[in-house]
Amino acid sequence: MAEARMSPMWARRMGLVALAFTGFAGWCLYDAVVAYPRFNERASAYNRLLAQEQADAWGDLARSKGWKAAFEEDDRLPDGRVILKSRWDIGAQYVMLAICLALADLVVLRLILASRRTLRADDDGFRTIEGLMVPYAAITEIDLSRWQRKSIATVTFRKGCRALSTRIDDWVYRGGDAVLAEIQRRTGLGGRPVTVTPTESAATPPAESAPRVTEEGHDTANDGRP
Image (cartoon, rainbow, N blue to C red; front, side, top):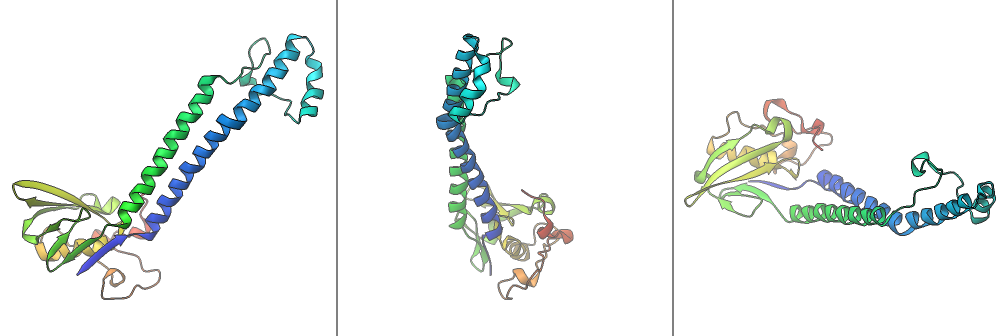
């Protein structure tokens, strides 16, 4: 029997992605609620002095308020006035906030789903990540075209009158190569069999720093997949 569960390394990376999206969402919220209104207050005070031809007093006023005196050139109009942040500028921050939180939620949802899924190949057949039990006789094709580059295999099988497919992703599910090798052994499909080191077999305890070798000697420890 071979079994694959969510890879801790993949889970950590996805957690960092979710954290990055959440952090950017917080930045957008800060800009909308704090940074942009403060900028407008500072810019409005400067523009009033400029209109009153008292621009020389700006330095003293900025220091008394604890403001940064300088403005970026991109923030200025040709006549020297500072462009205020508009409602659209502030609204755009809320839009980006919503997008970032939605993306973070999607990443977390994927983590939750992956943590509850298991790939298995045993005497009863192949259990897919979708929870379907597929008899080996129903498997018609194993596509390894992406295995070398991304550690992804596509298994096609018959269910009634329909042809369905599922993926074995060894990057997301640790031990996926062992499951794939077991399916190949029992079906004879997929061309050259994927080899599995003893560290990935269920019968042998993991050894430290042992790379997982896939078809044609591919070392997944050096896989450049994001």
